[in-house]
Image (cartoon, rainbow, N blue to C red; front, side, top):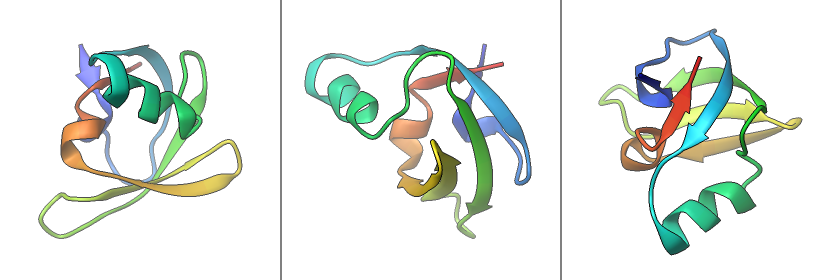
Amino acid sequence: MKTLREAKIGDSVKVVKLHGEGAVKRRIMDMGITRGVEVYIRKVAPLGDPVEVTVRGYELSLRKADAEMIEIE
């Protein structure tokens, strides 16, 4: 199982599954990250937090903890 946090800069990945419970999972889905969507990794901050991605045509910053809940292929 590979997560969004493990993806490298410049990778384009597909979301397989969202882990997490309740409000956290709902917030990730509200940001447009759902199963089957393509995510492009734009930047990773020097300490790894946050991760900047492009999803559905807009840029989004995710915390490490949130990125670990997103399973990719």
